[in-house]
Amino acid sequence: MVVMLSWESKKIGYTGLLKSTIKLAKKAVKSANIRLEDIGLIVHGGVFREHFRTEPAFATHIQGDLDIHCNGISFDSQACFSFDVTDGSCSPHVALQSIADLLPSLDKKYALLCIGDDRPTKHCEWDYESYCIVAVIGQSGDGPKLISIGHDSSKLNIDSTITGYFDEKIKANRFTKSGAVEYQETNSSENYFSGDQRWLSGKHMHEFLERINGQNHTLEHCIVDRSGKSTTAKWEF
Amino acid sequence: MSKVSRYAQMVSFAGYLPEKKVDTTSFAAPSDLPRSLDFIRLTGILAHHEVSENQGSFELAIEAAKKAISRAEIDPKSIDLVINSSVSKMDNELSQHLSPSYATLIANNLGINNAQTFDVSNACASMMTSLMIAESRIRSGQAEYALIVSGEHITPIIDEAKRRNLYLHPRAIASLTVGDGAAAYILGPSKEEGRIRFSKPFTLAQYNRHCIGQACKNHRGPQMRTKARDLQNGVLNNLGIFLQRAVKKMDINWEEIDHTYSHPTTPKAVKKGAKLATEIFGEINFLHNDSAETANTASTTHGVLLEISQNRDYLNSNETVFMVSFGSGLAIMAMHFNLPEGVEKWS
Image 1 (cartoon, rainbow over the protein chains, first blue to last red):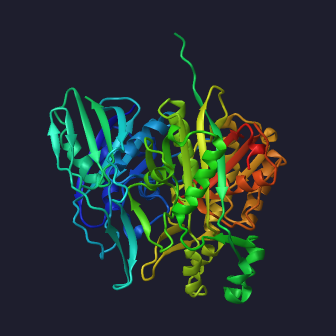
Image 2: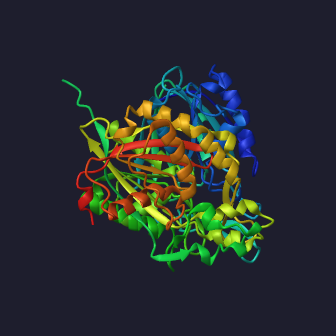
Image 3: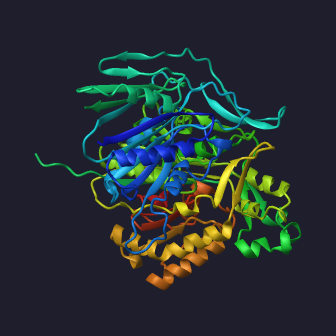
């Protein structure tokens, strides 16, 4: 599939995801020994956006602030394509797989994987640790190689949802979680890592990245979403 | 052993419009608008459709998906990839679904139990972005049948705009150009190469703050703010060269395209784009600029227009379709495909 050539992660506050993403993207691109203009695809994965924004895609703001191919189209201009994906905490694996799907058909050889969430409004209860993750993904090169991504919906609880709503009492936007969940905690062995079910996407990826140094065989990274559905990425080192 | 090549094709599509039809004159009369703007003359939009009670993005999406599955004549259980492309994900109470993916809920409702499910968000280009991902999955053998679906309940932004003083908030006027609707596509495998082709997709991120959709800060429901003229100029200034590059990349002949569909921000805007294309390539065989009574249904526009064409008996098996998509951000991309076998017989 694809190779993770470099990566950066950072814990962030309630907001400021875009600013952190830009900083980390510049560092990750430098570490991968490529230029920003070599990036042809940006995919962001996450659930929460400031003010519950629905459009445009968060990835377009990343592309714009990094100034990657922000010129008009000419007969020989190069292109970058940006969009978001989401599937609860499993969003990082969906984003990775989308990059693996599309990168071979684009002219550029590199993509940015960007993961993270912003607290939508100050009225939202926020008991999450937010992490911002940026990785440079290539079709080949030195780094952890993504072998496969599997998915499992057999334990899905369809009533475990998160919904944004307007609270008439305080005249502000908030979100609510529904459904009873018996949270699964961290499960780790030499070749397997599954994070806490309460974590956001960024925390899942951060903890995974903390474990890959020194790996020399394979590592399966499982993310179990609050809804019970899960994805498993198999990496080779 | 020789490797068997595998490609993708459009197996079916469907569009769905809720029954309630609202005339533009009922909410955007010249007396309502700054400088007595003649909104209908300016946009060409005569009406749009709105959800009824108990309908939201989800219910609209289910209607379109059921129709597309029925037309594909496949067992829903054979669908192993479901991608939702709805921008709004809004129910009738104006709550916004966030997690898990909307596709998970849609698949569950349709009895599609073993599919991978996730959402793609790329504004009005979300469906074409999803189609591109699905095509790649099928071509690589990772998926057999993919359902790409979207329901858009976006007309609450009309109410929000109307609540505002449009003299003070001219960037809300573009909110009056939308309608509710849904679309679904089924992609499946093919032994024949080239039944679906994509242009190189562009994001012109210098326009990424020209159209912002988010929750209204002090009222229930969404709002949209648009620098409409600048955004339209962004499209028109790049469209000519984009189309030339797209046609070349997809290796198609303009004169052999049977049906052309553009994302209809407004019928008037589509006319401007078509004029530009005609100057470059010559006449367009059949431009389906039929959004005067549907308005802009966001990510679902192409599916809604295809449905209208099918209902009017304009479409025949294996004819070719060229679709151009624009999305806030600014995404520009195009797709070319052969119509499914038997499209003229669909009910």
